[in-house]
Image 1 (cartoon, rainbow, N blue to C red):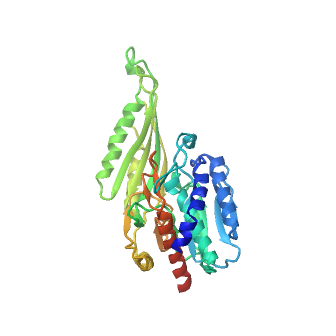
Image 2: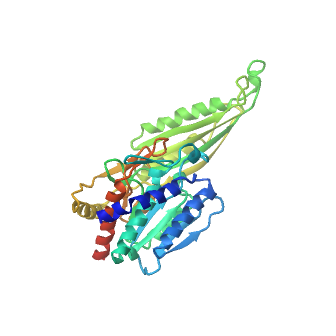
Image 3: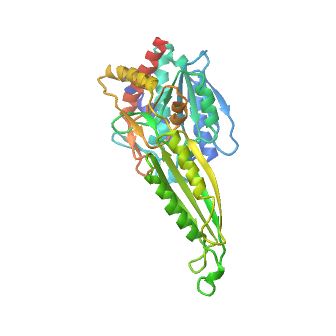
Length: 378
């Protein structure tokens, strides 16, 4: 198996270059769909049939199932959208430097799709029918909370016994067995403009009111298991004008559902009134991903994977993450879920994002072994 992945290395990198060199930010529908079409065609050559779920304003979500499959018990989930704006590929396209591949989305998480494809190719080449036991969801809006794909993920996950999230692994190769829940809120504050020097008393500062809200919102972080961050702010008309408008984006993280519900209620309460006269406030958003905590069935699946990894003398570590993924949905549902099965690398969402090329082989073999062992057990 190791020889197979080594032999296919150049082909994997060629495909990876093709899909990395397409701008596919979450709101760039044409680019996201182009990446999806390439993967649909690649999987079709293996006998996988695509069920395309059309989305008008974002990339189309895709479910792949082999034409010979009857009742798959494993769901693999991965996204093809990135966080990068249009034009990023032109500035820093796919490159290879030694054992590192670089480019927008190469690590998070386009390399995972290439690795998954070639793992299934290997199973087919060996007449190992574990490939028939797999469903695949290609998600197109994970980076903005899986808004359009959550319903599809939940409905599909109900049909399987196990879920593997093909998000990338960290440099140590740890898999993820739990994640914080999260939410996004957006606040708009309306005030009244006035000349800051001539008649400031006629104005009502939206920026002043927003500043008060930011202090109160950040105070929630003192509560156990809760973190609130006002990460985006804007407003005002000019430096010598009382600000008639201000807005902010709020990020919420929590370790348990109870903490999340408490924090959401407090955020809505804080933003339900204003303290600055003649201002008004609007808030939208809410919890986007539930908290995912490890349970007994989860630990059983992890133990099973560690047994598979030990056959290559790999000590498979696990970690808990503050970041969210589609694993939050399936893990919270109680379906045994393991996240972070993709290749190793680092610096996701940054200009120096990278993927360790040799880990395509290492992690590809692990995926093959796990799919094979589950198939035989079932």
